[in-house]
Image (cartoon, rainbow, N blue to C red; front, side, top):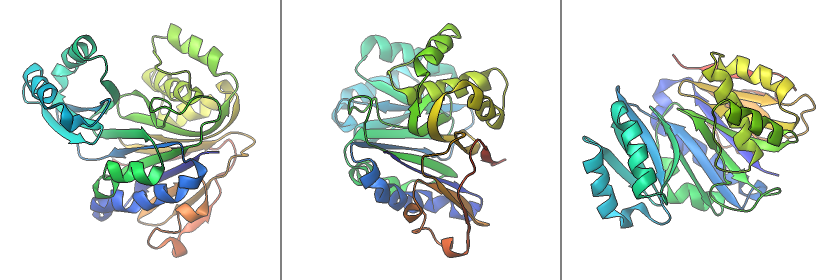
Length: 298
């Protein structure tokens, strides 16, 4: 049993409040997944620059020498420490060199995600504590997704926490279980993808990365996943401009959505949506089985 939340803002005037709106949604799902939590926020980007979300073994602020070295390794680098994570903004042209430098000099530092707009945070611990340690409530942006995990098939580690990101500005959270993830993982490895965990959710993220790399839209990639991914699941996916939801054909995992003129919101339970302004006037509905729901910002 895990908890999922998501919020996609239609009204640009609400962007400064994105974090403040989704943080209580994540906190409310703590009892569905008390082991670990994570979230991805799609905030402002800079043309020609990419953000790497770095995860440190302990507080990033304790690595002042390393942070200084990163600025030397990547000219015009900008670094923002956030507890055990740090957001490293670098020119796109420097990404390959910075990744190689980190892999050689500091293999203990994990790149949790990368993209022009996406920042991705996850840690072991109660979701409300994880939300507070990264100051989710202060973050701004257009959309965000979050996950609270109750581990059932693998150990409780930060690597096993959601969201999973396998492509630029793309991430996925998942409630359920895939029965053919080992076979799909082998196939995706032949297609050039790599995986850091044995988690089935990472395979689902990798599958979508592969399909979109081949030219599919997010909607089309999710539609093809219905035939290729076996099991029971609810997916919520974020991309640089999009937000999408998919349940399997049986749809045994709980899911509810609310849509107003200002936003689209997702929760594993309605109580996660009840904290949103104007939800009493929203169109509240349960996503149909085997149906892709997708929204995109220009």
